[in-house]
Image (tube, one colour):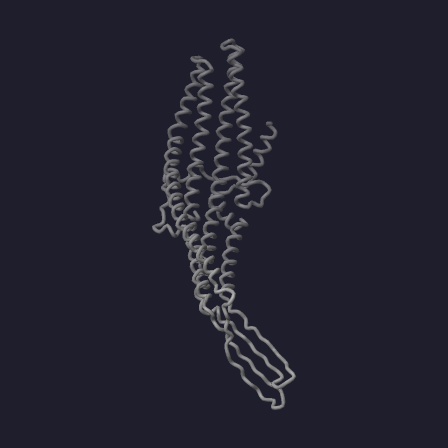
Length: 393
């Protein structure tokens, strides 16, 4: 176990350090998801152009045995013309949806990176605290062995201290494993290409003293989740308008020429090709588009309710985790250490048994874990709020 711990420590020292800003910049440059959201915007712009393409004309050539012997015509459909504005508006709404998804995708990547970064910092801090307690427990175990050999304490008391030292070594090994896994997760979050996972460089309580919940936008419609839902509703409304326009029969332009026969003359043809709404008048498409527009409108209204609740909840979490993290760091942890130092001092002076020392060690371990957990909860709450607002930190 000691050999494995030494090898891991050497590997940790050899790993490259990574600050939060470096981690965010690397993730934005290297994460495949970032490239994916950019590609989605390009796809939406292409789709918008496809929706407004002018249809190609249809041509027809005929050759007869009687004059005129040759005839060629071309028909240009014009049904697209009156609905072009609605189609263009629906395409723009699709691009708006893709842009909103892109902003939310980037915000989600940032949240992933920040959670992984501070998770690795928290795991490293837990490892430091566990190693500190293990060293203290080992020191107490050696001191207890000397006192037992001198007859100052019983063998049971010596064994109790030795058991606590063994438990502390196991806790250190568990923390070492958790720290290694947390760094692997950080490497994934930033698309790390190195052989050894990066080491997070920073403080777990970063911005804790000056933390203020991010201000909400004056207009909730600027939040990507709402922007996307509103864009979907606008696109559905424009498709409904286009479907209603499409019910109007619009003639196609017909042009052509006839020639051949004995006179070798030419006959210019100009006319219209009128669609005849016999089998369908387009009411079915209108009904489907009307239902889709109503559905997307309801979803947009629900998105506003959900986004408002998410923002309020996220801001509340930042406020409450800030208070708990500050209290745990500035009050609980120092007090637990004072109690532990006092119990150890009294034990070394022979003025108390080992039980208060063991209780103080366990209380300090629990408080240290609580402090690290609350500071990590604070960082995760900040990351979640920025993600809900669709912001890149």
